[in-house]
Image 1 (cartoon, helix red, strand yellow):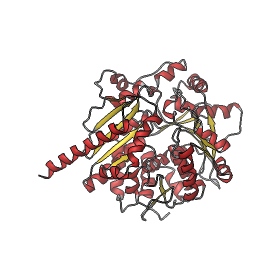
Image 2 (cartoon, rainbow, N blue to C red):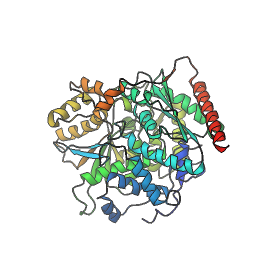
Image 3 (tube, helix red, strand yellow):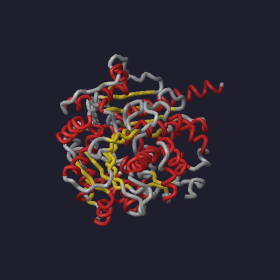
Image 4 (cartoon, helix red, strand yellow):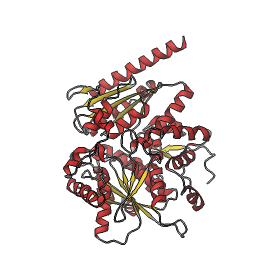
Length: 491
């Protein structure tokens, strides 16, 4: 456990890009070789450390994990603590993350007490603080480009709105996210926030973003970066969810070996799954269950080794998980293969070429050892929401219901069960349509109701427009503006 004082290096899962430190990984998003950044070596937490961490609050767990994976030469400990305190200062709940203990052994970890009522507030508020810390030090400007299926966009906007060294461009899928999600983005009228409504789904709007990021010279010239869940700093902060889930739900820390806790992770792009698997690799005794909606590529991968796209994204009640390409699985494959970047690169390049890969036998058997999975229909989502309300007067959002559905299945089979914690990524307040579909009454907080009456700003990207060109033009315009500001400031 003496790793905190050393520099932590990051390497690409595809093995070609040069290694970088945390700052390099933070500003890159994808590695230049198309891979994702991962720590070159993982620290191992001993029992003593776990026992010490077991009494920590959520913010303090984030501080410990970040200190471990960033290194104090990059961000001294006092600075790091201040950044994380600032990141969580706007959360509605004093504990930041709260566990609800409900009937029949149901534990729900509420990750949604941030400004936009979704778990992404947790990691993005920290990521934005890290960004601004380095930008101010280096007197630099970045343009953040984000594609969103609903929640990432608003959480990213909230985390950087009004920041002087950051512009943010968000592409949202017009008509494919809920009205509330859209309003949380289009009503932020800050000068550094630029929202585009795309006539397409979230996979289609990722295309122009990928094209722009593939032009390495353009990315460098305009200091572009992404804040999607490929960004390592988001995965890092999300590891804390799993530690808190474990410490809140473990029956004891006195037994040898430490007891297991099952963590049920509802996911789309697999960021929370990658975070959980890394937590497990560094010594947290959790068993992972991944729960998806009808977009079931992760479920098929775990069950059959079939990592292939379906014909189309299916629209479901758990809309933020309506994702075809779970890009963080690349991190999981890399870890499972023993950090073998050749295997990972071959696998991912084949997937990018043909959209279909059968995992090598050995890799698939390792995956099914470390993860259990399930895929949940809309009907099961509404039934779970109804049952949880009937038993507890507790409203689940449809994504949380995807996780809780697994718990109910296990209960009904009367499996002798390990303690289990279901991650709840969003508040039901954001998904009144789903709450109504479950035959329940939405409860809408005043600040969400107020969105209806605010002025909105959004530029349409219509079918037939050249989305890539529109994106490039906006980025060039923002760069010119920043250079103008910088010039005036220096005169």
